[in-house]
Length: 145
Image (cartoon, rainbow, N blue to C red; front, top):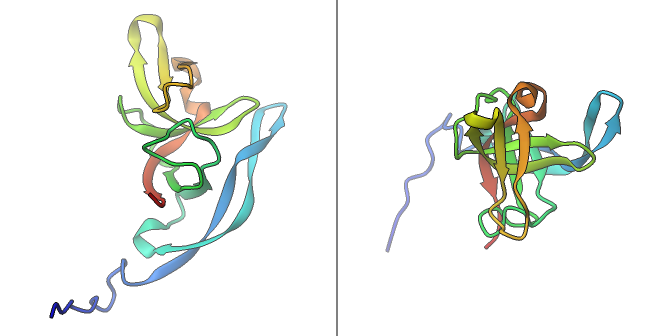
């Protein structure tokens, strides 16, 4: 028989928070992307929520098999400094927020936005536009396999 220790009182992973889940699509405004539309609620461990974490539901196959369509993704909106090879939420005009693996192409003064799914072509983001287009770094993914 295997016994598990009960979670300690006050452990943030022992308690949950209800967060708002947003669509990856947003209304296009003159300035670019507007606010994301709330589409539901999700209960997550308290350590997964917070005022800087925006939760979106993956509605595309561009990051499959790593992040599947239907997954919930927590994006930390404070972490906007790019670390090459990491996953970020990026605002793509007329598409909304997309998850991409970002790499710096310093020679051409741009970031390369890559999907895991080879059916989706690379996209590019001028270095001088990254501050307004990067939503934040992916902090966590909740999905079924």
